[in-house]
Length: 423
Image (cartoon, rainbow, N blue to C red):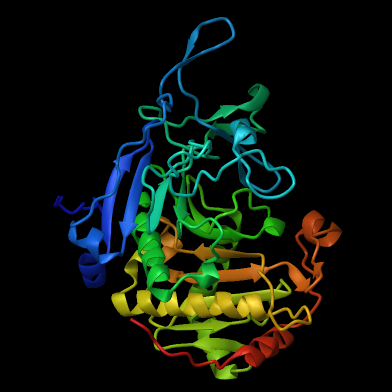
């Protein structure tokens, strides 16, 4: 049965996406948005179609509820409060305490809500309506931020004291599942599937950036039980913040100050300084470069940047750059898993965080920023992790247990810097 292709409201698909990836939208039983991104030819052509009906009996997420006295209560948004000492907004949502956990000793769920539906399985509260998928994106069921239709955020004050502003945390949280196999690893996925993941990042960046009140779109991946991942499945997330997060705010202050002083772009100049120095560059193809930054904090840290100037966000990448990124990310994940040697030559499943730093949505400083990926792990040896103790957690003053040059040298042992393009 042929179906008309979905046309996103703000995202402009590339030529490859138009020919090789099909986006199919639906809504889950409680009204949350859900998208299939298929790269298998039969689904791309429309010869096969995905299951769109979610059979669960879930209450509408925006339906009023009753309090302990039986009174109807309108849906509530999570709140966020501003720290008067730092100016940081802190979202708060106690409902997240009830989310299912499938990884680690505190596992509470018998099945995996991110896996494809398994007919006959006793666990039927999965988020994916179909029994298979390529890549899917959907709104988080237990979000730290969400937008309530018709609710305009308003500043109030905790205890009526203007020291403590608070307002609705009217952002959005989405999940991206990279593969239906809950036992798979992102490093094991083919480059073509990671290319679909890149498309999902670009698609959602464009769409989420146009939501009212959104200031920053942050795709990221937490990987590994030691990182704190609660669902054992190859997946990532996207946070659409109604504020600029502290890390990006600090970077914007420095990139803007650098531009005001020199007329240049700090991230461009850092990339080219690393390329000129060569020692810390660990991967390079025709469109991207990866390097260990000269002031790396983490015992394993790599920054990845496009070679072309003027790219502020993921949706601005062209087809060649999206393929180059998929190849670069695949190679980085494989070499990251090989970085620490346990003595058997097999490496390990590296715990890591992959954080996309994009230009903010409407801040005037965005034009002097530049898209970059910051990839890091707190593992410092095959059997040791770096704990963020007094100096790091108490003062945000990092103490490195290695040097950037030593990190880069280990990566150089794992394979050549120049890698072939695919796609």
